[in-house]
Image 1: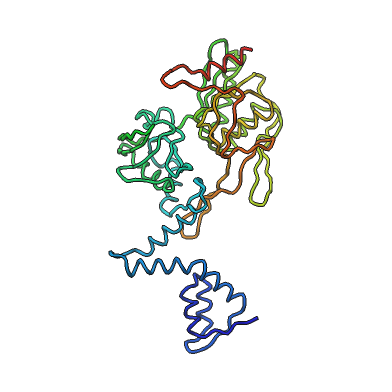
Image 2: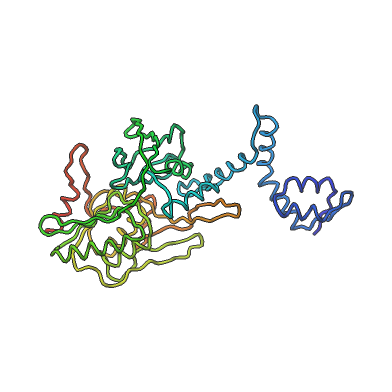
Amino acid sequence: MYVRKTVLVLLLVVALLVGGAAAMFAGRMGVNSNYTLTKEEYENWQYMQSTYGKTDMLKKMMESSYYVPVDGSKLIESSYYGLIEGLGDPYSEYVSKEEYEDYFSSMIGEYSGVGMSFYNNPDGVLEVVQVFRNSPAKEAGMQPGDIILKVDGKEYSGAQSSEAAANIRGKEGTSVEITYRRNGVENTVSIVRAPIEVETVDHSMLEDNIGYIYIESFESATAKDFKAALDDLTAQGARALIVDLRNNGGGLVDIAVEIADMLMDQGTVVYTMNHDGQKGYYRSKAGRTELPYVLLVNEYTASASEILSAGIQDNNEGKIIGTLTYGKGIIQTLQPLSDGSAVKYTISQYFSPSGKTIHQVGITPDYIVELVEGDDTDYQLRKAIEVLGQ
């Protein structure tokens, strides 16, 4: 099937089509000639017109009629943010070239910051999920659950998490002003940026020879540091173990699985499922510690720490104590684009070994223990010691 179109229609096609297809049509037509479109070409034109024609119309409208001059390139750039935001997924976002470059500088440690992590929560605001020990943010009194409203006086929505993070980072010794909301009350703090070196594992011996290991997040050295802590406590004569995952916002899944190797016998830790229904399995090796143990979790135990908790619970390896966990059980990929920008988006989700959904559900502890506001007693830790004494 072929469709005869005049040169005037073809000029309209060239105006509306994007990229290589438009150039191809323009090159194949003469100024005063007719050109026969194939069915495939005409259907492509229809698709481009219905998909991008309105965007082009709005851009031209603003450029010609807005009361002050408009930068059309900024309008197009903002449309990329909106496109990914339309997924309704707080973990997926468009990342500009500048934000992408800043992301990589943070990955290799060439930055200073305040020592906290946050994300675009389901309400579309920036919620703090983790404040690192001995960090400037910790010293300033910031806590998980705080809602970041402004950075240096500029307001940020949840969809602007990458931009907010980039502006919180900066040169060592400089200050950043953060306005946040806690329990309905707004606070503003000035925090001096410093190099952030996160020590993710801490351990000690508690009463009655019960070993205690706190894991702050799962980074590249965490499994090695966990093993060193476990070996040290075992050498000291620990008879049981408490692994504290409270306020652990996650990190590297492979590292969480390496720690599962030390806490589980051979078995499935978690499995994933993608868009096509394909499953992928993370499995632990045989050779778990001989120490009986429990896990401590709370509402800020998220992502990789929930994966570890789910595997341990479903395989009946240890009891879990605390409150319902956060419920972040999906996987993102960061895809670079040809112009230096990138897009981060969700590609699959995690399920517990028995098939329970983690995302937006969380892990329910075997023993639900709440902390009491205004009471410094750690009732969750106390319950862990009690369970291990039975």
